[in-house]
Length: 410
Image (cartoon, rainbow, N blue to C red; front, side):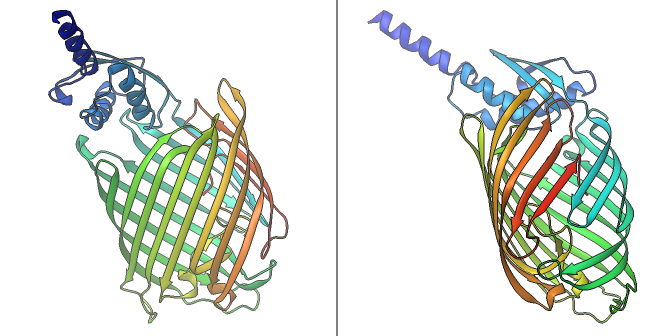
């Protein structure tokens, strides 16, 4: 009887060896970091431990969960941890995050290229700083972005962005029929401030946008205007980063309202939502299901959401549909083909279905199906996407299309 009691007590101790009173009281030892500050990794580790503090799993079961939680920061190529009583050992292999990266995008008649210099681990504290310039057969621009995911080590976060661009836009109805065209000079900036809860974020944002126009051929030239925009974004994010996909569920709702318009146009109200689910369903084969919806009331033709080329809109040339509303559903099935030392190559089949109300098409609703296949390469040691090539067909827009991109698209 006494032996049985001892065995039970040993099993209880083994299953609760990680029953820290408070995660902040745990001793954390960091190793392997060269650019990332130790206190930042320690903060990430304690945040991960908080989410695991009520789990009754054994240490051996918690270690892979802790590893994955730290990998979700997307600045490490590899993470190894060990839990010993009230002491946690963390060894990391960092990605190279300070990168001057060329990018190129080809969609329909649009060819865009440029250079972006960005650091996704600025000051070794997970900050993101980026600046770049692009040029295309339709125009050019400069842009910048700064993000702080944890203000003062708290759950508050902030984003700041700006863009100055000059581009010729063509609004396309169906089968590459151009219904409207203009040259736009855009200058804008946005500031966001939010709070990060356990599995969702809530943020508010303010933006100032100025647009001027010049005539293209015989099309009517839009009136120059400027306006303020305010709104909020709700995000639910329960995904695990897996290089070429993020395993789990994601939801976003975005609301924005314009104000102080410099012309007599009615203010616009925007509501947009996204649902996404990705999962490893068989030997690292990734299934991705996504649904998006948008509705804009009021505003001008040029206030439409500029869509095309991305998931849900494949086979529509980039930024040639100015939507007042849309509803899309997408299915992607991605298969890893080669695992290399510095990355993974995948192939995929995809299908998009959408209903789009195009402000550039005299507010006509267009329904389309798009399908095709793609080949992609993802870097595991660099904090940038790789490159992708997609071939497909769209029933209402591009009968056959080729999308090619290197690095980041903007």
